[in-house]
Image (cartoon, rainbow, N blue to C red; front, side, top):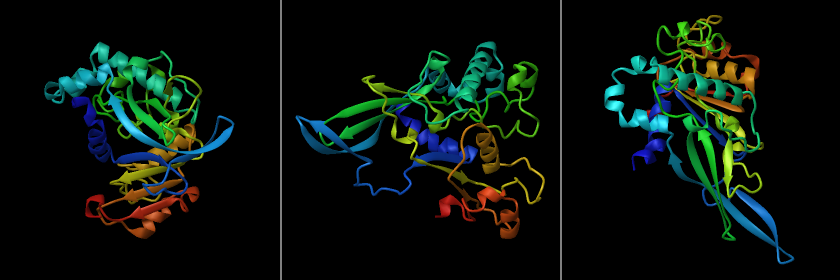
Length: 284
């Protein structure tokens, strides 16, 4: 039961860090419509089968279970715990692996032994009208520490981590590189025949970023200066540099923003894909 709360936990956690990510079809499908329709040859006849992807279950990694089982004590000493040698080693290994994965998207099944035991897993099932079924497991970052980036959120860590993992001062507090977005996440099929990607890892899917509590794109009202509360801008710059661009960014903000300022801060390539809804999500 305790490991089945990932979906609820994710909602709460992503609201806290201001982001929800998902991949969707170019045109949204009604809930009663198939996510895919396949033509299958069966006994020399062509059979059309409808298939739907469904969330099946979630498996927390041992590292996440450690935090979950001891959260009452650990939440009072998060940075002290993360600074311990075993926790620091796991953070470094996982960040190194995730940053490599983030450099490409929509790869074929690619789960490897590198830091594999540190990842949690989301399981999705493809169910077809013919009775055919396929289970796919996809890696996801574990719920540990302060979630955004275990190597930058606590003070003093730059003195102990490898130089190539140190973020510049501007990005330290806003770094969210620990989040492994679905297009970059390795997956594996059960049974392991062929290579059928999960529904959120196919090339024709569009990439949406929902920013809940967005503030201004620059994090403040200045036109040419980044503030400490950048949100969508961090994702936009980091992932564009690495592997992907978002097809849509939809930002929600409760505090009243100056429309002219909000739009003047946007890069030219975001003007047609950025939507600002100056209302809190909870009020919708």
